[in-house]
Length: 100
Image (tube, rainbow, N blue to C red; front, side, top):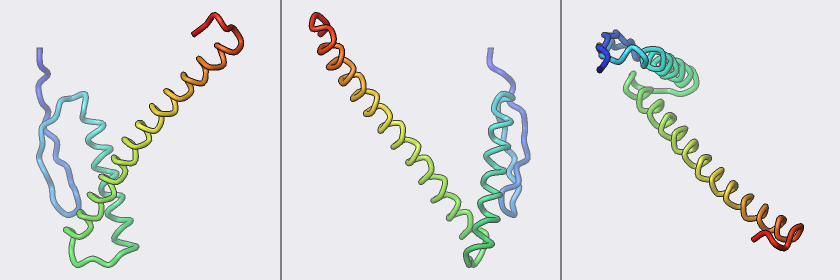
């Protein structure tokens, strides 16, 4: 059974957007919008921009960069995990030659 979507009014920058989300996603969506607005305010205080569109673009670049960094960290952790498993097998082989 699918959940009913609930309507949310989200203020991003100087515009209000009406969206419908699943109730379980409401908190995440609201926190994301808060992060966006906080970053926009941060960029407005540190950088010159002509209008709100400039700050939205800056936040979009920041957010995409954060996402790519997270993905890169996951890939690096997978690589580290694989290397550690290989080292563990080598050590086990030295400690107990019957293990391969």
